[in-house]
Length: 344
View 1 (cartoon, rainbow, N blue to C red):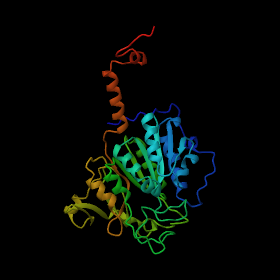
View 2 (view 1 turned 120 degrees about the vertical axis):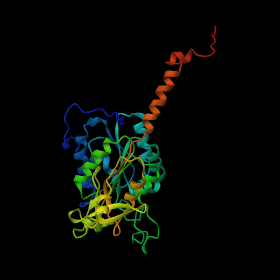
View 3 (view 1 turned 30 degrees about the vertical axis):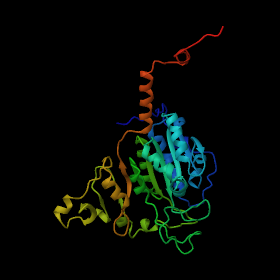
View 4 (view 1 turned 90 degrees about the horizontal axis):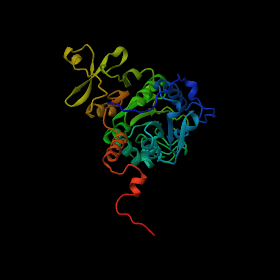
């Protein structure tokens, strides 16, 4: 059961309430502009008070975000945004805490902080800008750069196996994982809103185009001729259909996800999976997170939104129980407890 304690606004907020007066210094054409627009649009729809939003960032192009959104925020140090945000949330559970970070910031130098924030299930929201490159520092390969990619630091092609953020989140016992394309502002807005509603660590992977150092990295997904076959948009309670006119479906066969053609076999049609984002078992969610073209479509939308206890609420419960059991209720009780002596 959700225990989100962010106070609701008594006045109706609009997108303009969250627009910063600062100059946005991302490159023209950067996917960050679309992400910012989606966040500005989604925040008023949460109903939360404006003064209860806080943005925490590390270092990187994504981490300029606190300057570009009209909320409270902290521009932290490389890889440490998740740690700072954890402290901010635990100290004040009435805040809606958001982390803007990149594939290098959170999955390389900040990898440990990233996975343990997820494991603890602290009620924070992580917007992971995944452009598969280090953009701010001029084009080195990152933990998500595809194997074989030529970059400034891999002139013959990187030989490292890249992280799959979905797999990393599921492996760290993550309770919420969503994936969106920066070019789909409508879906981004919906997913940001869903993230805000989730009680626990919510990770949103945003496939973001870096127009300078990794341009068209996701063009295989957005190409008009094949995007219908290479994308599946998941919605809770609806069948997993994709392709032109929803001509294809996803079934579970031999413990693996497989594609079937709708209408060819009545039994296959009956076995098309219905998306359950709230399933506590991560098995299907993990398989959905690992799907990728050309064998399978890439899954977009909220893949997982399971409900589990959060670290911050459990910590509050421990403190409350300790207070109830303790004979010491104030500083005077403490000073006058145990053995005392008088000095004449």
